[in-house]
Length: 624
Ligand code: M6R
Image 1 (cartoon, rainbow, N blue to C red):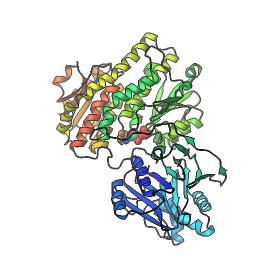
Image 2 (tube, rainbow, N blue to C red; image 1 turned 135 degrees about the vertical axis):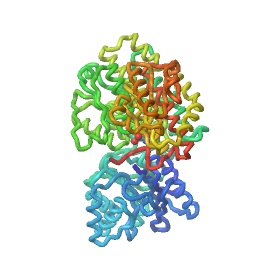
Image 3 (spheres, protein in one colour; image 1 turned 90 degrees about the horizontal axis):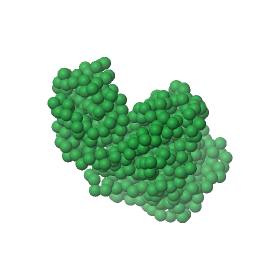
Image 4 (tube, protein in one colour; image 1 turned 30 degrees about the horizontal axis):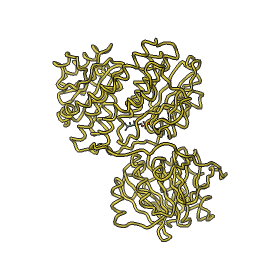
């Protein structure tokens, strides 16, 4: 979490730093701050809350500087206050430090520094780094050495940027199992946790590898390993086009992104299924540029696919739920036993995968620390690895053998919507591909499936055109304190996702259940105050799901359904019905989630919540 930025050149540093921070606000918005060198001294400006608070301060006290570092925070250690906002410095103001990640041994280091009479002014783990660098610098007056010595004491995964008035033409940055990109312009250099923040200024990018230190000047950089060896690596020219970030006339990014879903699905299908009558083509030979995004695919040969006896999916949050749908799809089509694990639950356990396993990591950002740790472990165990991500320039994209990139463009709103649809599409495509390669799908069945997939965007548009009905439904239930979502089979993950969307956008407590599980305990929470949302689509679990809904009705719950147009059974059972075009359960997750996204959005809007940046969250969760 958190975003780090830096600028060094002949231009004015503050506007560049602010614009870089604006691009990284998705990584946290608990506070923002800058450190610049003004008249040979360190000047620090910071404020709790969103970047706009810092901007107010900057308007009044505009520092004049050509070098600086900045930070946008998602609080881990210490409340989101001014005093805990980055940058942090030592008492003598030898250095200012901004930091991503967690210093796991900070307590031990803090005790050591307290014994040496160092005074602490915050509750953060970051401040330890400032004191430590300052401590080593005082000993040998060599900043690079001091940084190396400090880093050798740190445990955890992190990235740092360090500024010192003793080196007014340098920024020192450290990357340890994180993401940090250097941008090189003409006599100016940039630094950011995500390449997209420096991309508006230059397309010459150098991505730091794990455990590297960079000494940045306006004319270039020197790269070192933690051991102090100089590393020779040239920047690459980024071919990707700039991400355009605008609301396109919508009130919120979230609403725009929900409405983009038919386009996103069409784009993903156009990329991987250009012709419905040809076999799905996800081969790595396709690696190249499509619409400015890198594309790649599957290198697995027919023989390798035959040898895969198990698929392991790892992910977090919404990406996890797409993986759960993925399991149902792959098992139904390719008949390969598939397990889905919460990536953070793999920590401290051994992931039981081997060369006969395909491990799939799903991550919109491609930077989620838990997901990365899990896929790295799978790789080490010899498993074939596949990443599904929206960011072809991400850490995940770099470390997996195979890659499916979703065609979403940037997703700005913290709550995932369009990337979920694209992840689901990736699993349908993958399922079809694996089944075809295993000879399990007849050409007719395959063509029919692809044809059906191509129909979905139009059906999604139909749901979106009924947004006003969903808004009315949301208004009816916006005073609820607790909401239950349930579904079976392909729509059990939809229930989980519907509950997650409502929780994160509205802060209303919501739970998603496999409908058949309700009677095993959760039904105890139901009464006339609890809305129950049932996802009900034609298929083998329809009747049983309907029975589970009736069990809720018998407990006086408020009854809401997501149901298909032709379903007349639901009219007399449910108080509110959100209709979707008639679809079979197999493809239904591509539709059923949309009314739930809109329901959560309109509820949040009615309650006056911060729709695009809900409290306590960050879009990219880079701590474990
Ligand atoms: O970038 P990732 O897909 O790996 O992120 C995983 C989760 O943090 C993410 O899906 C989160 O749950 C979203 N806020 C959901 O809307």
